[in-house]
Image 1 (cartoon, rainbow, N blue to C red):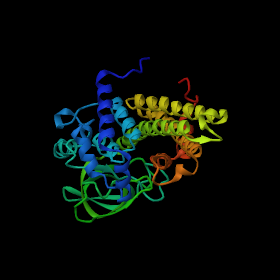
Image 2 (image 1 turned 180 degrees about the vertical axis):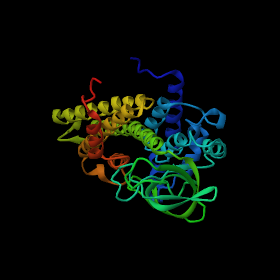
Image 3 (image 1 turned 90 degrees about the vertical axis):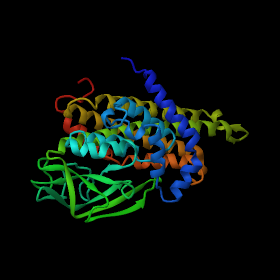
Image 4 (image 1 turned 30 degrees about the vertical axis):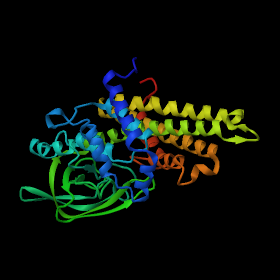
Length: 377
């Protein structure tokens, strides 16, 4: 199997890497985080590279690229510790709008491709424990339209977004897969309240409260699309995590090559070199599972969902191991706010909680094993 990237994919990766080197040094990122984590201006700069429209069809002003190109971009953004909502605005939301009525696509996709509009998924609810089918938000038909009632939590870049894609229940009980529809809600609409706050990794999130909020129907049978959107988010997270771990490992090795103890650099100590070897093994495990997750995105739901859960388990385990080992190898300086390694560590730590933690996805893998562990299936 050929895992080499095409010339176009290499050019895309290099373009993102150049932007990171020139336009998003750690000092800028640190200042944005200290100021509250607002990155809409950064997202607009990335749109100039075409990243806001990365997966949006060319007919709507996008580049029309696929999952592998998205993985390449997210890995480079992770390496640069870019905290803009690229995965939410450029990957997940366009996928969820792919089956929306044509007028809704024509209204929103071109604006999303140019970053004039930022649309994010708002699906988490208190008490759901990562279960996508747990939806208490209700949709009510009002004439030819719909209104929504409910609360969504930890909405990424919620107070910077222009609209939200919201799963809401049109029938069934709170844990039923049937009866979940997807709606688009504009932030400025009546009955919409957004309360934003900074997150520990230097980004922003928000609580979204909907009280008879007008909404446009995206998909009446929305649960399968919601699952696919979350799987796209997991694949993006895996790629970003690989970039983060790759860069944090490089920072740590550089530190060990310069920091002296007992008159010699840290790389002279065999035990520490063994720890770095273990770190690189975990990094490569995460990288291979990131590739696996991306390549499985086009498969049918049962195989895709199991593969993405497997990848998320490995990402979580690798991120925890790499982050903790690299910080310990730095010593006290590794946890100071002024040193960039601590910010990589915080982002890796938060990633474990996004789109399901390790225990959740272990359960998902277990439920889908059936007659085989999936290794040779």
